[in-house]
Length: 519
Ligand code: NAD
Image 1 (cartoon, protein in one colour):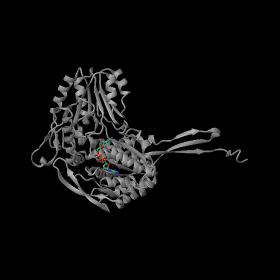
Image 2 (spheres, rainbow, N blue to C red):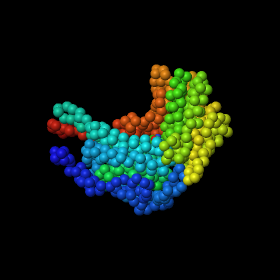
Image 3 (cartoon, rainbow, N blue to C red):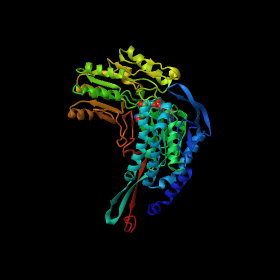
Image 4 (tube, rainbow, N blue to C red):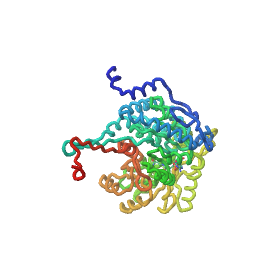
């Protein structure tokens, strides 16, 4: 014990002392304010409008919060900048100890945080529990792998000289996120950023402001120094202020293609590193030799988690014409069994759409699909729940048999529980049709023929691919898109490259040879 304390660096010991003094705990019910600067919840010092924090399950306003203005964004970035020197000088192993403590705090509070996530996002509680547990897993993963991944290399040079290649953090990083996996999206950025020695400011979606702050409380309670992690709330303008801030070195974005494009323009002005996790319209191919029961389970996983609001969903399901009837009957039966209801109840499988605007957008896609010749095989109608939940937006998950790839439903991302079913005849044809999209986030296929599985997979233009399963995303495996679905990778050891830069140091051990410039 004495030896291990003596081996601590003084900086690390200082952080630990302040952690012991703080002894904070995390919130277990939703409460404002929702900004988090210098390890404390706070109201923005300036705000330019009020945003309603709605509870999707009831449609009621839980809280109001202000969109952070330029002064608040400057304050959060300044705090992150001030914290950078101390945090970046810790070893990756020392930083990992804090992240592991935060993981323990999250793990001890999974149920309470999951309930807050349900209230904020409308997803069913069983899914929220998985999301929150994955937050602890992500913190533990990066705490463990970054010390090894940050190791540099030694390269011998002539005459005993040598070069060192060191991996260093980049500085203040920012993240901007979407609303479908609020705390998970936040931690996928925060954990690698912090483990690599950066400081980080996050802007959640204005639709789901709650749990990014709870993550901040867990990090603070674990002893992460003030300013290392911050949260500013707001809409697009706040995001723009953050992504164009001159003191920010890197932006990691999760959201739609049009917003990603704007953020890249903002980042270009000051040459910031960027990671883009954008939308998708991914194919799932069911070959004639597929195990039908597994293929149906795969198609359900690929379409109906989180009310269908999942970026990498396989929403274009291509099924071989010889098994279409059998597969479709089983799929429709499974879809009809989904239980739409109160997301807080354990036996609910489908919760509430995040907001009225998104719900109307999804209904619009279904209506236009009908006009374009789509046949509704099941669902697609609003479900009205009794009592307090009557103000929520609930959709019976929908399967549409689509006669043509040119239908809007087949081409555009819906971000809702609507599966487009398509028929194909040959492998060559289905590969061409699967790739006929500007997106390239994910792709999946079901077949018993492993040679075909790999042959087809090698031709599919997507970053996250699945053979005989779908939507399985372990934290150790990199995730990200091809084409307009983005670039850069989250998760896996590959994420370390996004949050670090390389420094090459040449060391001369003999005399300097400057001939013919000098004697
Ligand atoms: P969105 O693009 O509308 O908003 C995402 C975030 O960007 C929000 O926090 C928003 O406030 C912010 N924002 C808006 N304008 C901005 C600007 N000019 N500068 C900076 N920030 C700005 O997306 P959404 O509706 O929240 O999420 C749905 C989209 O996200 C879908 O397209 C979905 O596929 C995608 N998504 C992708 C992934 C992935 O990992 N690839 C994961 C989840 C969601």
